[in-house]
Length: 264
Image (tube, helix red, strand yellow):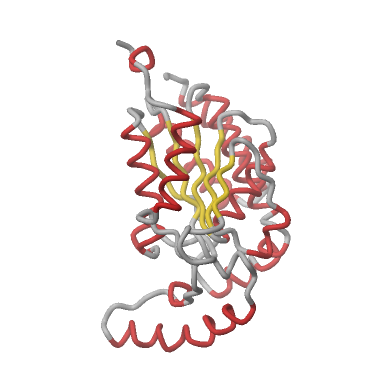
């Protein structure tokens, strides 16, 4: 795809103004991010977007191993099917206690404004890349956020969502369509986060500080959220109940890239 860069920047800037008004810093950040994605997505078949769990601000290399394995597994499957993909992350929160407090309202109201902002970004990308398919990948709160975005997009045919272990307070608001893969069990141990086990959740939070301290003493500090371990809330790609469902979903919706698509 070729495009007029100046025209694209003007469109992106206009969209940023619609979303953020007079907040120049947010407008600039949104515009540059959108233009960077457009530049990198040229000639790609897929845009894979990882929405991290928790507050949604953890770089992939610092996510728990099982969450990384999901993202890597999806990427590898897309490649095996013969497609070219671009993997990015979407951070929906800052990395400070003030940012967390500020986002409590967003968390409570199903990510309303943040989901609208991401949906607007995806609509812009789809408008300029007719053949690009987009897959949202999310676990726990990230799964809920992906679903909120998908609902904002409506019938936009190019966007799909893989959602694992949705955080239980959002389960009743989730909408599952043919473009959604919802996995609520790893096939081995029941996910007590999905099942809303208050006892398991309380125990996980009570014991998390000691795990956090032990990690620091070993010289391998972890984010506090990564020390909250609830039984079953683990969707490692190695589990047959996880990778088989994801692979089947991808193969069913996209299949192997044909020679015609490759241009031979």
